Image (cartoon, rainbow, N blue to C red):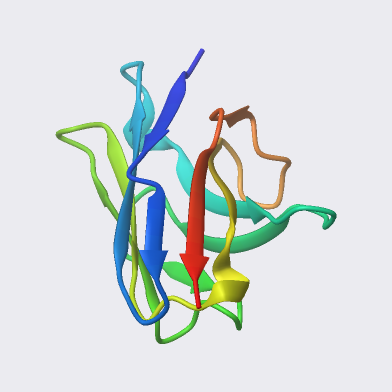
Length: 119
């Protein structure tokens, strides 16, 4: 069992930055790939970024490329999402998730953290 707790959300002006954190419980954190997703009001949840269990492979949604960076610190059981040049359309609840096997559904989800970008 892995429990995930996101933090770092808040209100920021367009062009600003935020760093989201996702703290995981459990000794097996380093064996999971980790992802960030978001869901805006009235929209479906969408993929933002993923980092594999080694930390050497990352992928991003087109909307995140060049602006967001996903990273992990296995010593702290934490995954991060650095978000720069934020836009109002980035406003959403951001969720982190843990994936045991590539290509499979994500196994565990956090409760989410709200990010609001004002214009």
